[in-house]
Picture 1 (cartoon, rainbow, N blue to C red):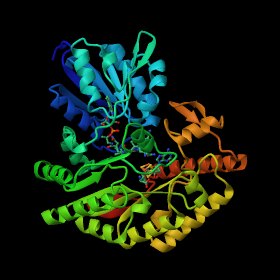
Picture 2: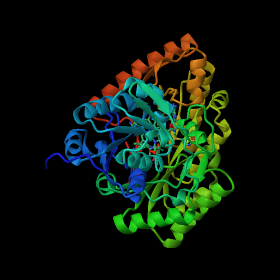
Picture 3: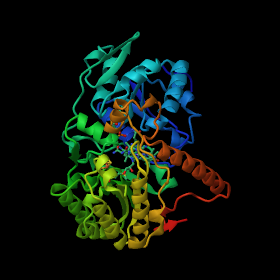
Picture 4: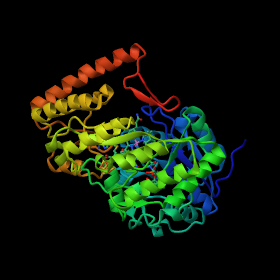
Amino acid sequence: MGETAAGRRVLLLNPAWKRLEEPFEHLGLGCLAASLRRAGIDTVILDEPLCGGRSGTLQLVREGGFGLIGVSVTFQEGAAEALTAITRLKAATGVPVAIGGIYPTFAAEEILSLYPAVDFIVKGEGEETLPELAETLFSGGDVKRVPGLVGRTGTELWETPDRPGVADLDTLPWPARDTLPAVLKRTGVASLLSSRGCYGRCSFCSVDAFFSRFGAKMRRRSTEDVLAEMEELIGRYGVSNFSFNDANFIGGKGRGRERAREIAGGILQKGWKIKFSIECRVTDVDKELFSLLKQAGLCKVFLGVESGSQSVLDRFRKDATVEENMRALEILSGLDLFVAMGFIMFDSKTTFAELNENIQFLQQVKAVTGRPYLAQVDPVSKLLPFAGTKAEADLKAEGRYRGNTLSFSYCLKDPKVEALYRLLCLFTGAGRKLRTLRGKSLYREYDWQTGTIKD
Ligand code: B12
Ligand SMILES: C[S@@+](CC[C@H](N)C(=O)[O-])C[C@H]1O[C@@H](n2cnc3c(N)ncnc32)[C@H](O)[C@@H]1O
Ligand code: SF4
C-alpha cells in the first residue's frame, strides 16, 4: 500500500503500556468510534496492547490517510510512556493528535506545555466533542469554537468551556466492537457499561473527580437498553462471560437496586446461561439482591474495602464503616462469590495504630469468610494522588507532593511509618522477584473458564 492523502478519517489509538498485559476491550474507544461513525466519519481502532505492542502503528499511520489521531490515555501511571510514543509518531507523520481520558482532562495544561506533539486535549466524555473537532479540522473551521477542548496555537494555550456529559446514555450508540473477536479468543470476556460515574466521593478516586465536574455524578442506562446490548453480544458474537466496567454497578439504594434487580430478572427470564462480574461499594451489598444476581450469573465482585480502620475510611471519605466492610465480605463469601478487594494499606497520614487495625481486620476476614486469599492484600499498596482528586489537592496544600502528574511521589508524614513502608517495599520486591523466577503467579485469580480460583 502506498501513502494515502490525509482525509476525513480518524485513527483511535489505545497505546501500549509495559505494565498492562491483560487484553481487555477499550470501551472508551469503542464508544468514540461508534459516535464518529454515526457522524459519517471513517474510523479505525488500533488497540496496541491487543496487537502485541506498537510495532505496526507507524506503518498504519503512514499509509492510512488519517486526518486526526485520537489517543486514549487511560492510566496516569502509563501517561509518560504514551506521550513519548505519541511524540515519535507525530515527528514521523505530522498527523494532528488529540488525546482524552480522565487523566488528560485534569492535566491538560501540563501535557500541552511539556509535549508539543499533542495538539488538543478533549476534556470529559468525547462522544460529542471528538466528531465536532474532526469535522471542524477536516473542513478548515475554527477549532476554538468547539466546546470541551484545551489546545495550543504556536506557544499559546487556549481553552474552550467544559461540555456537560451526555444526559441520557440511552441516546448514545452502543460501543463499536471491532476488537471483541480478538479479545474473546484470548479471554472469552466481553466488557459492557451499564452506567457512568458513581455516587461516592472517595478522596483518592479520579472517577468521582471526573464525573462530578461535568454534570450528574452518576447516570444509568435503562434496563431495556442494557439487556438489548447483551442480547446482541450473545447472538452476534456468542458471548457468555461479561465484565461490567461500571465503577459502581448497583449504584445505591432506590432506583439503583431496583435496576440491578431488573437486569438480573431480565437475564433469568430470557434463560441466558451467562457469567458476569461487577464492581460495587460495600454499602450496596445486600443478601437478597446478590442472591438474585448470583442466580442470574454473577460470579465475581470487585469491592472497594480499602481499610480495616475507621479513621482511615473516614479520611478517605469512603462513607462506609469497618462493620459494613465485614458484613459485605461475609454476605458475598456466604453466597460463594469470588471477591477481589480494593485495599489501600498506606496513605500520607498512616499511623502504626491504623496498620495494626488493618492486620487485625484481615485476620478477621480470613476467619469470618473462610477465604484465606481474601486476606492476602498487597502489603505495600499506597494511595496514589491521581490528578484532579482531593488526595492530590491535600498533598499539594501540605507541600508534600513531589514532581508533576507524570512522575509524582510523596513521603508519609510519620518518618517511622515511612521507614517501615520502605522496608516492606524492599522485602516484597525481593519476594516478588523470587516468586516470578520460580514461575509462580503472585495472586490467586478467578478462572472464568472453569469457575475456580487459580493459584
Ligand atoms: C475497565 C477498567 C480497566 C480494565 C481495562 C481498561 C481499559 N482499557 O479501558 C483493566 C482491567 C485493564 C484495568 C486495569 C487497571 N486499572 Co482500570 N479501570 C477500568 C474502569 C473500571 C472502566 C474503564 C471504562 O470502560 N470506562 C468507560 C469508557 C466509556 O470511558 P473512558 O475509557 O474513560 O472513555 C471516555 C472518556 O474518558 C473520553 N476519552 C477517553 N479516551 C479518549 C480519547 C480521545 C481521543 C477522546 C476525544 C476522548 C477520550 O471519552 C470516552 C467516552 O466518553 C475504570 C473506571 C471508570 N469507570 O472509568 C478504571 C480506571 C481507568 N483504572 C484505573 C487503574 C488505576 C487501573 C490499574 C492501574 C490498577 C492497578 N493498580 O493495577 C490497572 C492497570 C494496570 C495493570 N497492571 O493492569 C483508574 C485510572 C486512574 C488514573 N487516573 O490513572 C480508573 C479510573 C479507576 C479508578 N477508580 O481510579 N482497568
Ligand atoms: C475496587 S474498585 C472500587 C469499587 C467501588 N467503586 C468501591 O469503591 O467500592 C477500585 C479500587 O481501586 C483502588 N484505587 C482507586 N484509586 C486509587 C488511588 N488513587 N490510589 C490507590 N488505589 C486506588 C481502590 O482500592 C478502589 O477500591
Ligand atoms: S465508591 Fe468507588 S468509584 Fe465511587 S468514588 Fe469511591 S472509589 Fe470511586
